[in-house]
Length: 116
Image (cartoon, helix red, strand yellow):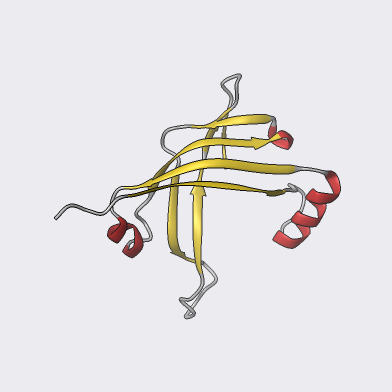
């Protein structure tokens, strides 16, 4: 029996600030400054069962990121990954706290690299 595959497109946008350390403060400051960030990604999961059961199993990502505060549009480069159900470092015994992790290797139109 072959592994069940899944591919999906994800679009997200929101406000960003690079001067603050908490999520809520950064959202409010980003909105105040008009600093937005968005992405349009395709995530391809080759083996859904393994992806769900192994938090270290990553799925490749393709797509683009738009963040003028970081220098404009970026292409998502090969090697970019997405992990699901990764235990939060501060979860302790409460295993209910899980994270989605994106590692985006980006390149701007001039060929400069950036990792988010």
